[in-house]
Image (cartoon, rainbow, N blue to C red; front, side):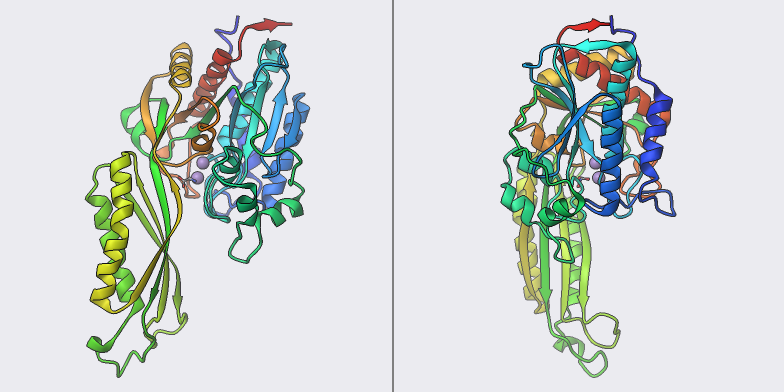
Length: 416
Ligand code: HGY
Ligand code: MN
Ligand code: MN
């Protein structure tokens, strides 16, 4: 009865564009940082839309929002889909918002068709997926899965010292439900690929079988401030020179684990700042290392301290490496992966298996519920960039696969 059911691609596109008007940037992207007033505005819009679609919304103590469409069997575990509404500071319109609003479009489509599923359907907005304002990333789903305690989650502070728990309370999304007390029968997430593979291979849908591992580190370099003029080169302990050497070594570390190794460094502070004729005494870096293979993922993390020690002895600059977060490579549930494959075939979408290069809430949700993801192409594979773009056709195709993957797991359906 549902074989030929299709979502409304224009309605999905319009919802994504309306959400993208919240915290829109001049270059066409979004800056909707987690638990900011803009995030609250996006959350409120999502809740209004869900309630207008006949769903009931509950919020847990990490601010994760669960919008529920009842099934014919209220005892059945919900089949869920979820993603995030928070963005990078220079993020795009589609990263996260697509997945949340594709879930809403699935419900709107079922409503229009008068389809009742046996299992309830839930659409989830996970808190602070990006990790841009509060580190680490995916902390809302990570507390939900039990990988982090609620206290740890609430204690995360942004650069101004505001805590995640305090900001949840301030924006009115400190819910009552204990995180994790909400069992899920299955979880799917639709997302743009954020890389070049689908576009390069001409495929419309990625059947995501797993997610690569990620390590985050903070690195502090302490040299000696001195005068840029009279100080001989051989006497210097220049924190910027040490940082430059270390960043080059870290880049070579990823290239040495080709083709899948990834390393990204950011210089977050350089002291004293704003003066070019004092040699830098202190530099702070963030480091993001990734690999899909567990042994290589561990090898890269284990090599970083050795690289730091070598650089320190060569430059006379003290280097401290602190592990902030580790998310090992994961594989998704075979049954959910098969459901995505069947749905892609049913929706006539050219598809391929792939591993996600980016982290997603589904990583943590997969610890507590059968999970898989659905990717669609993004232009040039560009994401975490205000020019991020995806076509309405691809977004609709991915949403049709989401619809049928969820129906595949939601038990028998009836039609009004
Ligand atoms: O870092 C990531 O991969 C994700 O965008 N949070
Ligand atoms: Mn995302
Ligand atoms: Mn992202």
